[in-house]
Length: 207
Image (cartoon, rainbow, N blue to C red; front, side):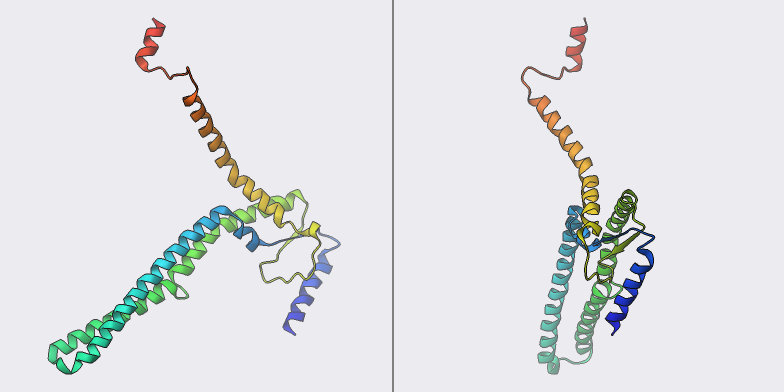
């Protein structure tokens, strides 16, 4: 029933604005996954997460070993020895729990790192959508990724590829110019008969 309610609201908005505004649709999640720089940054974050997971797993193995040894040797321990061993295990357990919360919890480092990773790319996507919307005279742009169910869409109203092409073009331009400059420099250095004169050689020629 709730889904039909959402569909009703969606199509009501379409019917209200269809006559007055030109509508476009994009898929921001699709665009994000197609950006090479985002994929590289995401890979680095995933590598960091794997490192954190391995660290906690090693600590957990150490905790289990110490706990098992303590249980086996508890009857032989007395006084301060018993308290010291028990405190060591308790402290390690607390450390593991705190690391899990600080890194993998709701407000942990992973969520904040992922948000910081995504935000600059979201800003780029927003600017590209704005440019495409102005160029194509779009009054409304809907995001298929943002909990909006589009059950049918003609290709001409889907501007996802146009936004993605604009983003990739903007990202590649600096790289292309630097590559061209690099190739030109290598070409000049390898060309026969062309040598860069040093300061002394230049003075002799002038004389």
